[in-house]
Length: 436
Image (cartoon, rainbow, N blue to C red; front, top):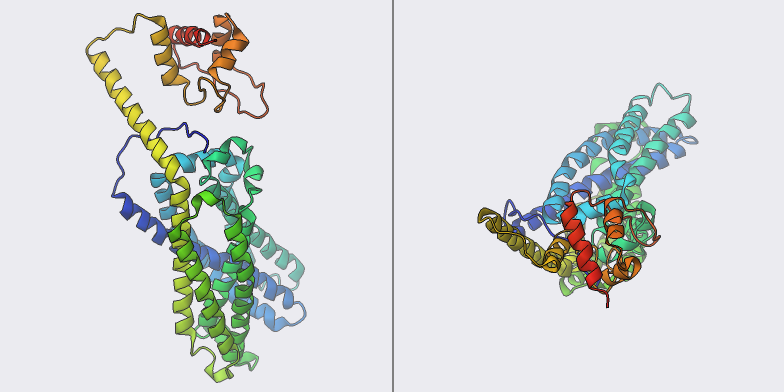
């Protein structure tokens, strides 16, 4: 494992960590449910509206599904506040680091969400007005759907990156984080889940929505037949997930694997077999009996989601465990050093007389996060710096104040303008003294 050169914020958590982790699991499950309904609803609306170009009755069905998206997207946003805040509290350094590394894509989420909302409302409320311009109207909905597909991909890429600090030095922005081996398989699994959850939601909604019940009556269709069609989507997507699930598992880096993670994931996969069997029986039932097994299907689906969410949580905790322990040690050392510095200042303690002691102290406080004595960390080692500058202390000082970028495989050093000149001089003296 690469050395993890970070400290945490030395502040107490606002509640017990176990409570916050439980809240995160529940809040994330609620959020992802409505995200699934937005993404799946957008895809089904687009599918049925395109199908409606040949058979207008499907355009009416698409309109009924579209009416659910605006409500679900609002709930998705509201439900997304809690897990985002809890992530920032529990994994502060990790989530902020991945935010920084994914850069522009992460900060685009707010304008992308805004644009998607505007397009969704425009698509919904222009349905009748654009009845004679269906290709343009479909394109409007298609643009909203594309944005709803991009936003979760950005979020997934970012939260995936936070799990693997060992990879941070190799990431050069969003697209290099996107091509990490497990991102696209996880995204495929997410899309499949979105369609499955939405189709199951439509099974329940089609029996209670006045829009759909009126549509069925106008076209002399039985609601059992429509439910069977939505069950067919759930069944087909479940089969796809039997392929996507193992792909996700084999592409996950091994440092996050654990007994509990595998137990929950494999339990969810076993329940998916039962889900497929129940849905198959529903699809083979007469119209009047379709839906009788829905309560059992809902319980099984809910349990599968719970298993997957818990498996994801245990993977995250295991993947970050070693880094969190190292950061905890560094934070404790930082707090101790800060308390000692405050004590020394209060007692008018003088700086050490030995310039090498002063230089080592200043180096530890300002440089040790990126430089080690004899090996590359974020920047070159102290021995390499001493070799490059020989007896040129002023060269080290000048570079520290206005660094450039010479190494393609390393980030540019930030200017050390906050460090006093006497401390920079002491650091340079100590560095050059390390040359063997």
